Amino acid sequence: MIEVRNLVKRYGDNVAVDHLNFTVQEGRITGFLGPNGAGKSTTMNMITGYLAPNEGTVVIDGHDIMEEPEEAKRCIGYLPEIPPLYPEMTVREYLDFVSELKSIPKAHRAEEVDRVLEEARIADMERRLIRNLSKGYCQRVGLAQAILGNPKILILDEPTVGLDPKQIIEIRELMKNLGKKHTVLLSSHILTEVSAVCDYVMILSHGKMAASDTPENLSRLTQGSNILDLTVKGAMGTIVSAVGMLQEIQDVQYQMSEEKDCVDVKIKTNPEADIREAVFYKMSELKCPILKMQYSSLSLEDVFLELTQDEMEEEIPREELVSEENDSIPEKWEEEKGEEDHESDI
Image 1: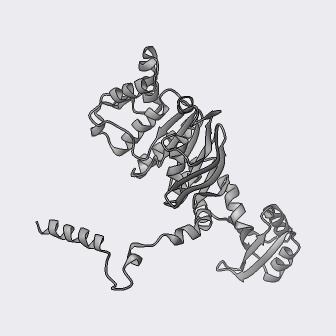
Image 2: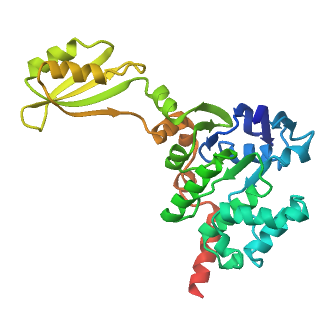
């Protein structure tokens, strides 16, 4: 549905996107992750046609965004991080205006606006001025304008930023529902959100693709092994002997448990191996009850930090930008600080 081939974007000597290649498959909700400066927003702006690449191509449903911009953009509904709303309009007036911009036939505009009001769950707000809406409802209005005209592809840039927990849950549920009808490309810094909503994840680092797979496969790929934590009731010697008969074990550690007459066992296996059933049956034979059995695996956040560690370390905290020669704050900050102090005096 979206094909990005050898995409490059430079700002002077800085390469924001470096020969990027990926495909977003139809019917998926794809998460787009990366630390600040990784090239996410620049890539999304090139996909939507807002920015022109220095090299490479973007193909939207068979249409090159540079050679056939109108045909390609008709396939896209876009919600930027700050929704392009007009606060002096009512919700319906704004959606009527957007439907005209999208060249929806006049005879079908009212029906189409009614549809997106219901789909975004803001029908009861259609007569309200946008300036009087909460942040959550403004995001819903932004989503409604993105799905006007029923585009095949939705590109959502940080759709839950600034929302309270209740609003975040509601917007996530709305995105899941949209994923049933549209191909969705979602940019987010909230890793739990990507894990909860997305079918597929792409992680950018230094403008390049660091990894791309399902959230579950990314965890297994980075971890390199499975860890099985057990608490088993029985004699240490019996349990050690039983575990020693199991196959595909890389390493095992034993220690007496805080539970009475129990042993804690930590088993490391190959990433492809799942020995839970074998452990269960072996301990059952020996009449050693398993009181706890738990896999420990990397979360998507752990994967993200591991894959982008070098880039994160390159981000210099403000306090480290103090001049080494005179240990003073740069002049620009001193000026800003002086202005703030002056204003506080007033």
